[in-house]
Image (tube, rainbow, N blue to C red; front, side):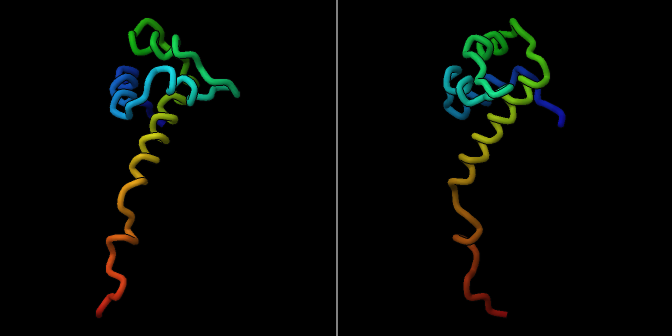
Length: 85
């Protein structure tokens, strides 16, 4: 999987209305959540995380974004029930 640019973390996080603290608590690496300080350092370009951490951050952001999208209208709600052929 090709990861987006690390600069996108802040933009995506803000678009999802997440604080650094909330994101840090949701990202799990090796059974533990990462720290808010690490998220801040990555966003300020003061730290380049290893691939495993970056992958976990983007995976978590993607899961949150997908769960928000799934709260919309479903295909079952908009499709015709009594199809006439």
